[in-house]
Length: 367
Image (cartoon, rainbow, N blue to C red; front, side):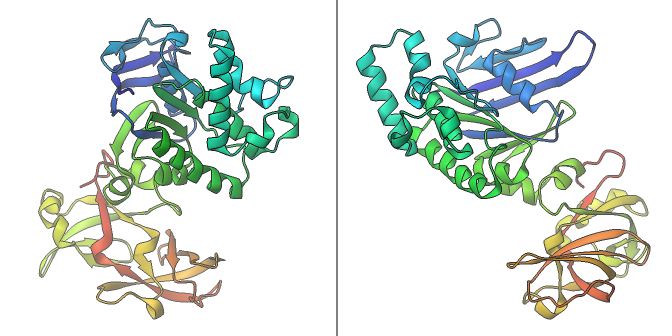
């Protein structure tokens, strides 16, 4: 088993581009850590440095207490699953899974045992004599994972392994990988740009942007308490609404004023907004904190939000409502599927005032 530590790790290329900047991150033994962020944020480069496929410019990288900066990839006791799966087309599934063990000189009897056990875990025993071209995308993905399993590594590294699957298979594969992690009891580091994958699979999530680590937390903590506007906007679908606002004095404490809305500051944020009195802030609203008033939850204080409906997406289990406020600001809400709003209507949403977020407009940090 293995823990991983990035200690102020930087990757800078010869052209001066810095892909990863001063990354400090600890991954606990047996943890499923997900690195997530948009394209070019540095997540794959971080994984490749851990795998030994990229040199480290500055800082130190540890597996357990061993610095691996100069350790060759083959000696790091890791196994990697790539986005492309990288299966040998001329080999059978069995031979693909056994190849790395053969190179290591593992006895044939042990290779047979390891490959059969991994195939049984992944339910691909019936595929062992087939070639990759005879497999579906989901089956190829299982073979790539099985090839990693047979090595019995201390760390599994996965670089967007589900991105080539269709939507239904992705959901199934997410559950299978989570189950596999629990079965193996091994450290997983998983890279994706898909925040749904990150939220459903990771025990913790590390959010990156432009080579800089933004926040590390459990999925629920990350969603409930984002540290800045980037994390708040990236985690969640549809994304959080952001409105320019101002903290103003009100009869019963501080209030928040936008171009079209006036609402009280939640009690949980009252102390934090005092330094922002009569100053600009950013108001954040999750789409699910906006309701169709005809199907509102009990015991919630709602503020009327008038909008002009521009798009209605009926998903069966929910409805996504897009609209514009009176000042032209766009807004999106996730509401009860029984909602009867129609495109072109002028309607009122109900905003749960206890579920708003406030951010510093200069730094983007949560207030």
